[in-house]
Image (cartoon, rainbow, N blue to C red; front, side, top):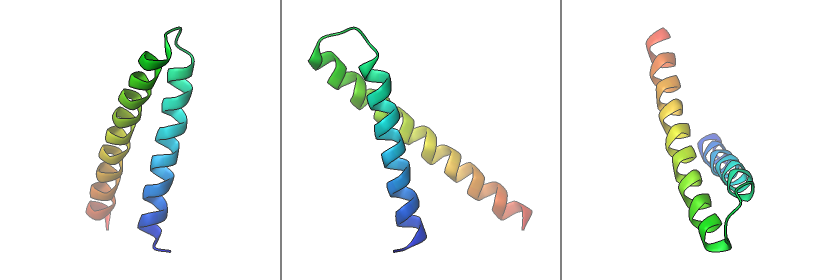
Length: 63
C-alpha cells in the first residue's frame, strides 16, 4: 500500500481515538457527546493536516 495512504489512515485513526477520548470525558448527554466527538475529530484532522503540510514544506526547503 502507498505510504501516503497509510499515513492518512493513521492520521484519521489518531484523530478518531483522541476525539473519542476527549468526548467521553465530558459529563453530558449522548447527543452532545456525539457532537463533541465530531467537533474534536475535525479539529484534530485539520491540525494534523496543517502540521503535515508545514513539515513537508520545511523538508522541501532543507533539501
